[in-house]
Image 1 (cartoon, rainbow, N blue to C red):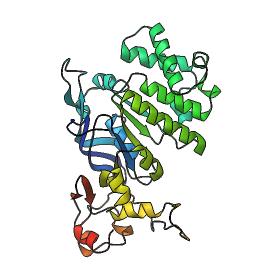
Image 2 (image 1 turned 60 degrees about the vertical axis):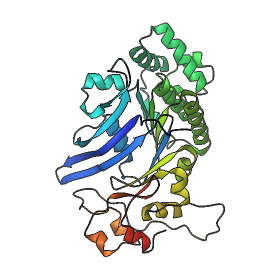
Image 3 (image 1 turned 30 degrees about the horizontal axis):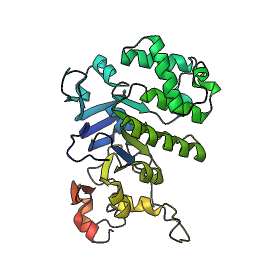
Image 4 (image 1 turned 90 degrees about the horizontal axis):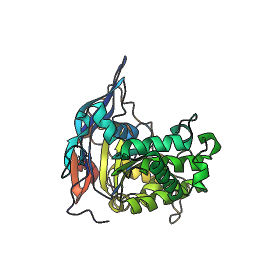
Length: 341
């Protein structure tokens, strides 16, 4: 997919989201920056607690007390307010009414658990048609036609009949297909998928991933895909952002990340995975525990678990640097040359 020469559709700059607790401040997202281009899939990967979901919920303005977006910009290119050529707007500066026009129509989100993403007391018809009529300015008959067409595209059998079902009448895989249909029913420019296959079995996972790839090609939607599974990232993503402790520690093309991982955390993640082309007796788990970002010191969050840390790591915080073309890493070069791959 060609992206060269095109402006990013989304630019996240120095995003910081903190949770102020009685014990102190949890820096869940601490200085995240990235760009997303049209028709591109960005994979975000990292352990539980690394800040992946908080990052995308900040983009969607779904952070509630005690959470607070304390700094940064989320620049989205749209013609929603300009009535002409698309221009960048800062999502974080929109009021709630303006954000409602963006959320669902221009940026949609598929959440982790299909069992709780749909309201159990309303039919699929109610939930789909409400979204379509609100954002696309069509009457109920046209909204129903669009809903049936979308259910058919995501592989729901007999969509006209299933439109009248309640969520409990559908399987987990079917519910996730409905959630994806709702998210794409307004043809958004960006789809955020927050671990959309976590609660599904392996066979259904494969079907959902193949469905998302097909729909992404058809609708030319940019996708931010969050997952723990590096195999899914390898299959789905064009670019990868590796997160740890609320920070991006490595960012680059998916091929570069998998064939030439530079940050010690990225290397450690890959060594945890079984491989069919390499015979090993045991996997190599990452020693220690993920960091607790409560009143975290201004140092590399991976420091306590890093096998190649040096004295400088205990005194300074590394900046994101371009180690190779469009391959960025947050680690001191001395540490990398002193034992990193």
